[in-house]
Length: 388
Ligand SMILES: *Cc1c(COP(=O)(O)O)cnc(C)c1O
Image 1: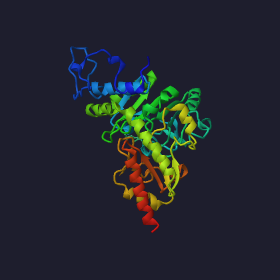
Image 2: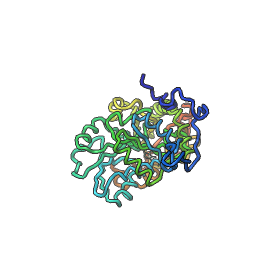
Image 3: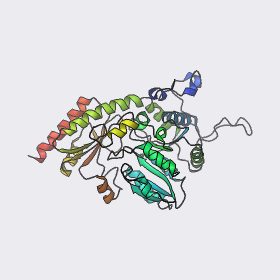
Image 4: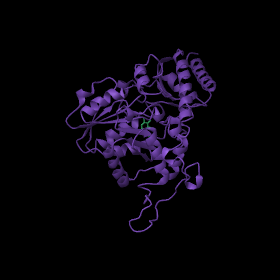
């Protein structure tokens, strides 16, 4: 029987029936930089921790199994992983990238990758006709679905038919849904990107990143690049992410349950002009997401009637924290225009619909009554102040 994802978060099938590491249930932290050789030409399989470390390798096998890839690679942050990914491209290669991406990815592409003569065209993958933008030197399509923060949903399978026909790599940043809700490789993607800092870690306490692939040629390129550039995840942080992943399933379910209730609550507020959450039936990507994912996640973007209202919410929240990042057990509220997307040029922000009254919620696993009570209090206090 094929194992279900909740089980794969805990157990590697290849370890079944084995009693290694003195029977330790929690995988040990191999805090070592180097490894003794058994003799000349005789390696334990581990030579130096920049290349490989048992704790990191165990984590990588778990993440590969969650994404149904042949290999996963763990990095010191999501951006370290994406920066390494860009090294598989050459000067004058062209990449079609979605225009609504994590701000740090846009900053990397515009400032570092372009300096290295990689060319980018930004399009809206969920609605533009990709084929109109393919050039002879186009090598890849890079996107997130749902996007950050506008929650646009791209049909991965439909897009992968086009990328395969034109021999382009399809790269999907799957951070927002995590492998618990969506597996882009199964839908035809070649490479999956994760900021492991978010749902995989789940506790707002550790930075990490992952690249996962199901292609041997890409796996070999990554291995060479990691050995050469050295941004691998440390043994202790690998252990923290392993520990986080154990509860990925119940965290995703609880966060999503809370998010659905909060989205419906927000919809009923006079001061809220728009709620963007793919679980809502009126969301344009709702049907595609039902087809390609097992859930809708717990990220909600919403528009307030004014900048003053948005700023007041950020000033007044107490239990909910005004902070960047997402995907942890604690509910966070973000102001995309000056935080996550500060380095995205103003014209792109406007085109994507990010304004000074846009807020983004990463819904955590607190009791829903406490979350709604907090929002109610903050909204009421703001209304009293602004309309006194
Ligand atoms: C946070 C994030 C990243 C970057 O990851 P870090 O771990 O912060 O370096 C990349 N993509 C998405 C969608 C993110 O949310």
